[in-house]
Image (tube, rainbow over the protein chains, first blue to last red):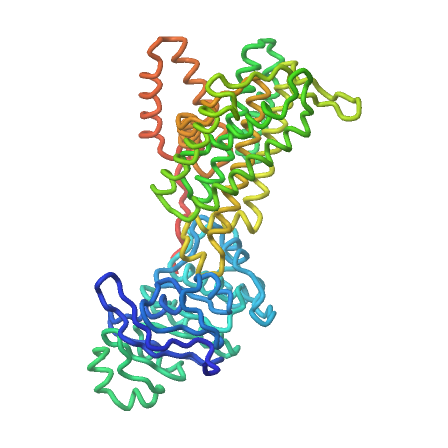
Length: 237
Length: 320
């Protein structure tokens, strides 16, 4: 396989009789930021889950660092340096902020320990003020920060953010985007799924649009912005 | 000292004072309740902290009890320390073997598979010579606590046995408290909250569930051992589904996910049994009714009572 960090080829996934992914080719290289876009129900989250082993694809394969991981348990895929921030704020409400962070702490695949609890708290100062609070006591924005912070505690090489700013107040969403840019600057590859297409294209090296389980566009931000008919046709903007 | 610690300290003092009242009956009754409290706390690790609702926890209780009965010499007392370790080990190993299969299923299927395994153990000891059938086994001598000729206490003495069980109860509580504060404990609580999320974070969920099942089983075996040592008798009913159901009820009454809740649940359960048995021969009827009322009007169990009695805090989620 190629030197991609994460790669999917000819991925076909079904939910029962429903054919959701129809032969998707997708890749994220080391240090690359990829925006994955598409309207609701087009298969974005299914593609993420299929690559992460949370949903089993019927055909096709997934490779992490060139190693075939199709059918491998999700936790083993995660241990290959991939951190997933799911949509809907995936905190553990029954654990404190500190416990949410420390439980996930581990060195990266190559033994890197760049992200410590202290560094995460420096990146998210709001969390430092809430360390002893239960996860359930946090606001939506703080929960999202905690989820991203917890993902960073695994010292990942690829951070996958699924609708990280959904439902957040604009100023909190701006804060999240600032943090994503900061993470990107540290050389962590990021795969971003978000409805804020302008923000995604502004930050990403490459964008992919999914329509009915198929890739209909792949290109960088300027190319996409130069073709407004694609945005209008496939994303309605 | 905060209110919770003060309550715990007072409860402990009260417990320590029970034998001083001089009633052998109540000393033995509270010993039995403390053994059940250990049993309930062990199940709480599984149900309240890992989210695995088992209806077969009596299997570990029975194995712990039968280990003493089978390991004890006929005409001599068994060594307390050796047989206690054997009982915990046997129950832990049996739970590891059973857990290997059962942690792969979830929800109601987990409930049914654990029940099925416990029934298998019940019939293994009921229908074969291994456990001498339905007659069970009498243990002629209480286990001997001697170490190199020095005997620190005598389990045949109900007051000594009481304090020994109290110490084991406290050690079990401390062990579980430490475990729940450790990375393993955080992982188990994470699994209870969201299994898929834990997998996405790189946690081998099945292994963690198996660890929880094994530790809970080993502690259940500890409780079973103490029960056999107290009563000097074991029979296949120790594995019965009603035994698993009772300990689950104790937890629900006391409050899931709160170790002290399991202890409180055991006390309330036995106290209600005693009370209603003294009032009527049809005691199960008011007993059942009382349990229904408690569950309906106190869904978080007794452990939720202090929070319910406290005025609501103005502090809520912090909005950004």
